[in-house]
Amino acid sequence: MKFSLKTLFGAQDMTVGNPTAVLLKFAIPLLIGNFAQQLYNTVDAIVVGHYIGDTALAAVGAANPILNLLLSLFMGVATGAGIIVAQFFGAKDRQMLSKSVGNILFLTVVVGVAVTLIGTLAARPFLVLLDTPAEILQGASDYLSIFMIGFIGCAFYNMGSGILRGLGDSVMPLIYLLICCVINIVLDVAFVAVFHMGVAGVALATIIAQFVSAVLCLVRLRRMRSVLDVNLKLMRPDRRLCARVVTIGMPAGLTQAVFSCAALVVQSLTNTFGTSVIAASTVIMRVDGFAMMPNFSYGNAMTTYVGQNVGARKTQRVHESARYGLKIALITCALLVLCILFFGEALMRAFTSTPEVIDIGVRMLRLLAVGYMAVAVTQVLSGIMRGAGDTVTPMLISIITTVAVRVPIAYLLAHFTKSAAQPAGAPESLFISLMVSWVLGAVLSAVFYKKGAWKKKAGAVMGAALPDEPAQNAKM
Image 1 (cartoon, rainbow, N blue to C red):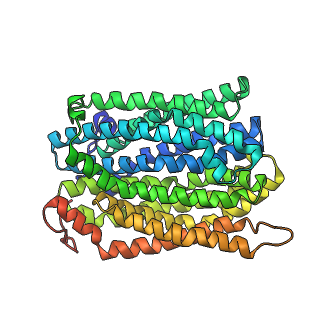
Image 2: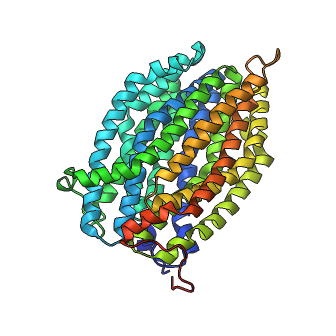
Image 3: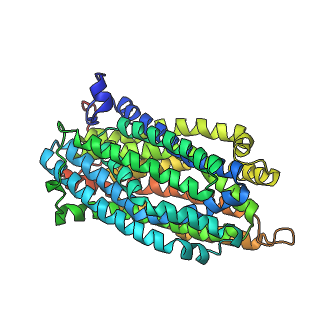
């Protein structure tokens, strides 16, 4: 694979070249980008925890599950967009690629406005419905409401990044994210430490940074004239294209919605344990985000890789994708898990100095460590299925593991561990249930991958059924 600045900063054809090298070249910017994304989310928590206190930290944590729920539908559309872009790009069909991007941007406007309106109106009622403690209700409401007012910037940034990644360009979204990260950190400190705006300042800093990165993504798409055309004429809605984006993206959106709904239900349980556990849980989820970065990065890389190769009808590369993806993901994840096990207490101390919160957090991180390797398997195999156009199977797995397993186990463990010392039950219930659901998800993903329903979806795009076994010694 020849290296040049053009190949580094432009669209990447993942249908040629050594698969491991191609995946790493695409996934490493994704990994760095996810790190930056998690970093500026983490900075929010660190700034709030140190400059305002544990109560404000708990307020941000209580708002996040609702925010994630309202983002779910949009993120599903973004997933469908990336898959369609990857397939048309792999097929070298410029006209349909340009038309699909135009329709994707149209859907971004529609979904972005809808989520903004719903999120702004529903912020406080949702928090009340979840029995959010009175001492953190106002802070959580302020944080969530301000974030949702500026949601359209978040929508265009994420959708623009999704389109660029579908084109094989993971470097420019990374650069824009790093710019966003720097802006967010500077504004976080300024609004909270200097202007004393509280959690509202943290939310305002985030939406300003995301608006800047959204503009950069859209400008980048306009300048990629060698690959596609982007103009208002192409944004005219095409019923079939919009339906295809929604059809492929909706299961992914429902998958995220399932996770978010489960998080809301579990958050309601978390709230019964008190402010210390809520604060510890908030920190754990930030650390968890870092541990999950390789899994999500490689899962997204597999989606683009398989999508492009399905579009190009490269059956050999599609079949061998699991071997390469799993090898890279599991090695990376293992290294991060070791870091969490050895440096868990130091990570907790970066957020808070409260001994009780630190102690709870360290115990919970050790519980979760076992499950991260399982998630690596789930993400890689799900990424392959999604790239082939099968977004329904990962959705079903998520529903089974989250709704039928995680939530019931969390509540049952909490119920059976109630005592005089722990009237709400053991806080470990929250994370044991999560770890069990992760392991089951890996098992189910492997089973459904082997069954091969995703091959039929790939065959529909290729115009012929994808064979069960690749041809031996085929050229890459």
